[in-house]
Length: 191
Image 1 (spheres, rainbow, N blue to C red):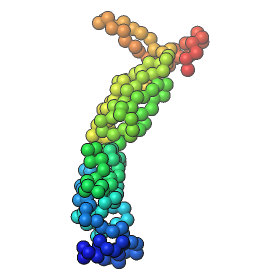
Image 2 (image 1 turned 90 degrees about the horizontal axis):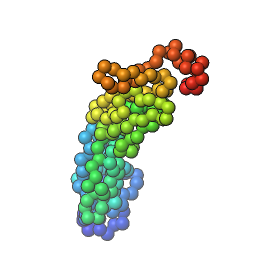
Image 3 (image 1 turned 120 degrees about the vertical axis):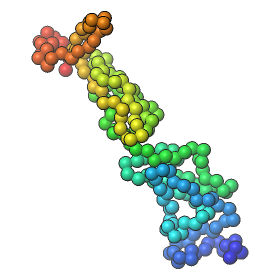
Image 4 (image 1 turned 180 degrees about the vertical axis):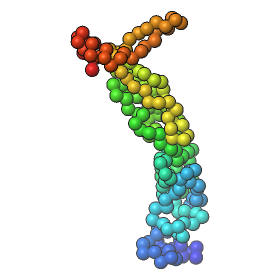
């Protein structure tokens, strides 16, 4: 009964659980929905113990299915005013794009926003001095968990030559592998 709940410092759950639950208060928080493609871990409770209202100070944890990660608050706590913490911040389960795109030999990758590469992540590529970027300098992680462009490469300037094409643009072409040996013989220390 309600009087029993208010007077008894701890109650034993009707399912005869072998641990004590904190007293239920008159206030609590309504159960909230998990993010799409995710679920909620109710710490210390079985499925049968999860009620419509969870007690103040109770914490839930979001979990994601498959190759998805949580973006936003992972844990929410029931506050005395009947709300959950950080409800203004959405929690989403998003697919990860391959992390191999987030590094570049002989170059740098700027990841925006910082964190795991999920839908909406943008990579900006640049090469170290003496190297030229081949491919796009930007790539976006799509909602399908794939990058929208192949991973670029940085190759040594000594492996390239500039050619003016008929339109007047300067086009960089890779030299043939045999030209690398010639460049090394000529004293070019590019590796």
